[in-house]
Length: 143
Image (tube, rainbow, N blue to C red; front, side, top):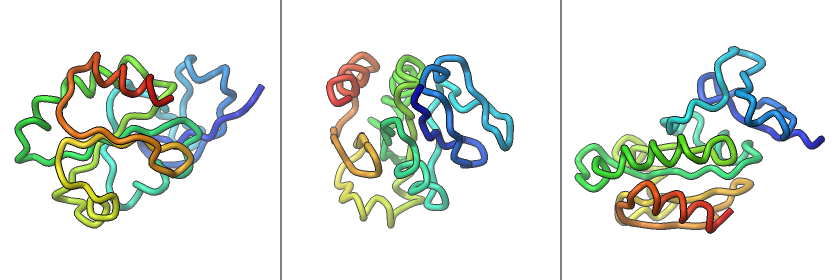
């Protein structure tokens, strides 16, 4: 059985989990918190790269800001998509106002923008607010 590296959403430790156990609510070996909560994880510059490069599952990041109306409208749909697709995909959010260097690094010009990362590299990008079903279809179309 293949093992996957999964980064803990709480302590950011890399865990090795047998792929067959992903759906069995695995917990972090270090802090004992659930590795999947069904909610998007808030990323900061302190652990952004850790999650993007060390997770063996795709990571979808919502680049957003507090002042953005479409971002706020899409937030519940994004959370619903996370609940639907975890644990085969990690969902995360990055506030572009607080993490301007990362937003600039990925050339974020409009928000909300979703980027799917696989093995640390951008594999798909979509700008504009979407409903939960559209997010799920977009993610599934790029897995």
